[in-house]
Amino acid sequence: MMKYNYVVPMGDISSINNKLALIRAENEYVFDYNQKRFMDLRSGLWNVNLGYKTELYESVQQRLNEQLSTNLTYLDIHSFHHPLYQEYAEKLCAFVDAEGNYTQLIYTNSGSECTELALKLSRQINNQKVKTLAFSKGYHGTFWGGMSVSGLDQEVTEVYNPKISNIEFIKFPENKSEEEELLTYIERHHCEYGAMIIEPVLGSAGVKIPSFPFMNKLGELLKQNGIMIIFDEVATGFYRTGQRFFFHYLDFKPDIINLSKGINNGILPFGAVLLSNELVKKLKNENVEHFSTQNGNLLGIISAHETLNYYQKNEVEVSKNIQRLNEVILSGLQEQDIMCRGMGCMFAITINNPLALQLIVDALEQAGVLCYQYFNSSEDNGLTLMPSYYTNSKKIAQVVKLIARVVRSYA
Image (spheres, rainbow, N blue to C red):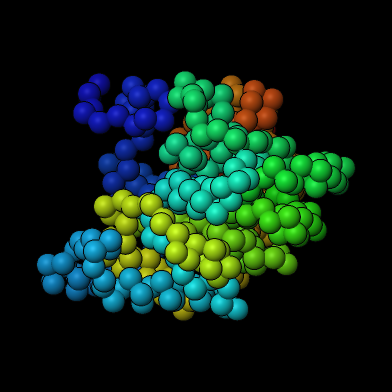
């Protein structure tokens, strides 16, 4: 067995030897050394939204080559300006909200960094109300702030205590009674909270989907009481739930929007935090302290800019594809009597048996299908499917039947 010189700090660092080695990709497939192909129902790690599209990569490659020809691949955004900074920021802000509620953003390198920045800003604005609300099964990354507000990982990250203080977790409501209970609780205790960070669909917890009426009531309540709303759209953004962004389904605008993953189809580390105009006013004359050497990396911006161009150019096609995939997957699994919940191109299949779950994931990999898994507890776990938007619907219909057979074999 080969010994590797790198480790991955997620779980057992010695487990790398058991991982599948992949070397190339095409459309909805990835390939190993033996040219065996696997349908990627993980979209990388929920970030290769458009699949492994030659058309997209050729446009990115051309623009990267143009920039490389200048020999300027890095610029300290803290000290200098480059036209790309403004060109992309203006375009992304308009794409996120056509009404102009977001006209300024801050560049980051990842979703985890977005969380760090958002928490800093919320505490800077609300320094008299420092308590932050988060869902008990939410996930917001593994940096210090993200680790502190990710309810899903509180047990596994106990070894790193003390984490950021004044974080309060509340249960994600799964019925009307729980919705009302949560809203009543916040109403009673609103004076304690400066912010709430919200993962609009709980992706890592197994695609837990809130009702729109509840989310609108929650947003209205938070706004009325001056509680800053941080929307973590890292996983849900860029059409993953069907709309450009989840908040487009709702009647309110978040104060902060965190974006990464699908922002550039996973090509390079990149992210952005969008600030509402009202928040920008509050930050005026404030000394904000957040910086990373690679923030605003020119090549990262180019990859995001070309990806955004692709989204806009093909928006109608992308939306139709997502709707079709949603129908094929949900109806196909229902016909096979497999319990599944989903929205847009986010799906979860309930298994609730840890041993069976691992056997199912392994069997699907052997059959050429890559899935993700969620694990909240030994009684709450299952498969997560996040297909890219250009996954062939006829092929996915056949794969759905395969998944159903495998699930029935073990669960």
